[in-house]
Image (cartoon, rainbow, N blue to C red; front, top):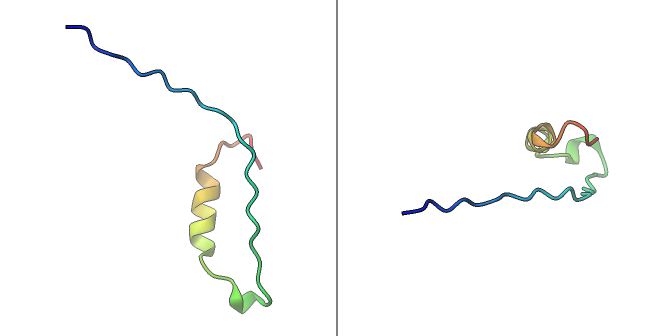
Length: 45
């Protein structure tokens, strides 16, 4: 029995997130947004 191997192919895609509010009090999910940012490739700003 042969084991099948999956070959992963990672493709770099540009992602833009527009995030804003009228005032600072309107901002929410800041911790979640920072968590997503920290999981991105470190070579991407």
